[in-house]
Length: 396
Image (cartoon, rainbow, N blue to C red; front, top):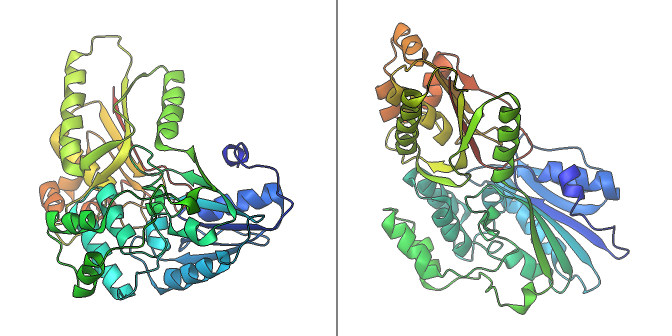
């Protein structure tokens, strides 16, 4: 609440409407009402992530693949902002997860069609910027369209970033931010990532889209502010670790790539550091954030953080003195209610004692089952925030 409060203006004396979507949006709404008192509004969050609010209605819907609850709530939200005047004020609260929770397919595209494309993109291993580009051009609410619907009201959007690079246009697919890409870009992404969409999707993209240009005058009364981002979580961890006497080395807060490949690269770095350490040197902590991807070729249960940990354990081969954790800060790694996992020198031995073959679980994208069996999952429940992935490797 303290970080949001620094960017919240005094309560306007005209009509105020609070809208929002994302895994952190209900907590954001709760913080707004703690400062402003009861407000009119509607916020959509993930199932299990609701918070008690005094006036703002909180609706829960599905993530990462949208459902009818999200569709119906988004339809109501668009109607709620229509007809506002230039003296009215809209506060939009957007965090990661809004791309799935704000669901309004363009004409001719059904919810089922959107679900199919969304699921295929998530399984393809495509980076989040490519996924969100396609989502925008199949939407009637993303890519600045929510802000355009509220014009001429004044709008302030407060955002929590969960995307590498903190581009406001990518957070929640930018419902209040202008969009520079084209439907042709979306078609190329589907082709490049070998996704064959329903005919309705191809038809819609070939006929253009409704995204709002950054130069559109309907965006002239919108201010977008990112007040929490992945770099802050790494900075907080680094400060805490240095206070414990660790040698902290940050590998970047916007790391992208295939989870198992990034694991191999970071394992090699950890092993080099271990080999170079001298007697009396402080332990080294490698920190990184960002959003890794998984190209799903198996049928197991997993997510990018758990897959990173499994691939890291295999690459380290039980090296003494090296431990690691990788979690999604929202408490959900992939589609499972698991934040991530931890590993150490005994990880592979524990698995072997249970008859598990780590490489087979990795090949089947079944990291969550692997770590569940050896009891090294990290389960936080809803964290009510979302600043992307957090990875730490301790070399002692």
